[in-house]
Length: 441
Image (cartoon, rainbow, N blue to C red; front, side):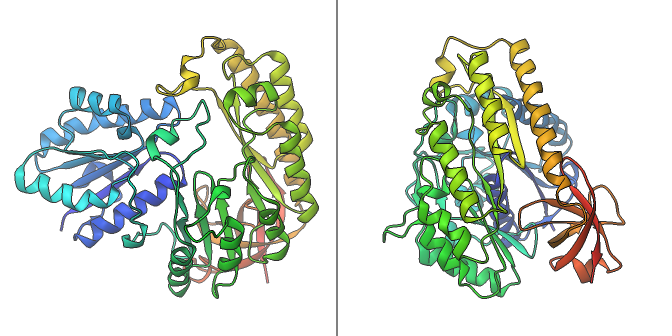
């Protein structure tokens, strides 16, 4: 039997795309192989949000040339966000011409056809579609990473065009699935043992299906599905989040008390230049509403340091908003120019030394706040949905709280008994990025 492996870079959208790709390959008879260097077919699902992702991808891609030479029947596929950029496809064709199949984010369902053509004709296949109007999610049968959790796309693409972001160019214009289709999918997932769903979209708050249903309507509908215990979503956009959606944290008991709310910068001047369509006041008012409705809510964010033209005053405003919001965690990045975006043409770049100095200050602040907030959980008993054996120890399990806190804990139960179950854990130790404890009955 032929074997496959998928190497995934990037966000949850890419992870779910990889689940769908795995489903198609297994439907064709392929068996998963843990080691990519031993597989008969490898799919590299790429991300293009930051330059480092590009470098990592090309570095790994080059290593597969030896595999191809030693095994002419080996098939290598490249997909995801990077091939949606013509310059990337051109580079693959020029420097990595031995790659068998290249396709993009918007025609994943064509993989079986492309694979068949490659094997029948012996010709390399290239298939990139821009702004595909067809949503094929209902035709997919993903191989989930967890039996008890599932990723569910509710929108595709993005209409925001933030000046630093390549996503609208790689994922196309925004499209929303029908509410009834999403609900039907989640009902089937619940019947298969799924207890937690993550609703995915580049901007979930702008969800609006052809029948006029809003994101809040969707959350309320999913909240009524029997068997589902937890609802999560990613990602929110401050310009679109509604009071009705915020109210769901109070009225929908299955909606997890956690939100990822990217701020990107605390400076109104920088936010305007980023084309974010909100200011500090608007952002902080959203945080106030969230905490008014749900005092225990945990909040994470994204912050970019060193955006072109960022002054010391702008950066201090970013530090200030971080202190005021007191995020539970933050994904912090040094600005990375993406060819094809407006910001890539801005001439007032920030030098590397300044960027790294500001980045280090921000990380130090955020790590301190995260640790302080985690210390508040010591001695408390938390409900944890168990994901599996901890990555750091074979003798402990790991899972997430309602507020998305990572918990590593010990238990007398076996892996078969505990994974996918909701357990109570008493927190005995707190760290910057995780909590530790022991299961209590």
